[in-house]
Length: 191
Image (cartoon, rainbow, N blue to C red; front, side):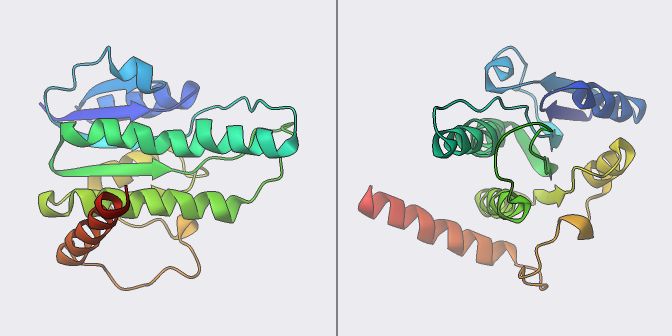
């Protein structure tokens, strides 16, 4: 059976999971990394949809609150993908859905920068899994649940999540493998 994993916070996880189930997939859900421990990730995951997580920034200063927002939210998404990597099937799809700062949060919002970091996660994921043919899409959080499921099942690019300065040409699997080798070499040499 084709399996999907949906992670993130709130009701949207259940809604996207229901749409994937309606397509005949076995769907697993988790709100965070701790809940992944309770799931059977031994079998291959064919489709992974990562929705944003709700973050309650903490800190006594604005700088501390922004740091908390980034480390617990956006950078925490890197940890989730890293945990899911071994379970992804060859040819799997990954959909990384952008989020927004919650209404009423007293934080400056730089949506372009947050989207850029999500693209960094997408590129790193592609590089890590280049030899396995995994497709990665960054999708706008404004997309409907049905549109997100279509990205998961059919792939594609979301023009609403595209960065203006992003290169338009496709990067080959070989180029991603070379980039991964270079980055891992730098980490080991300086780590």
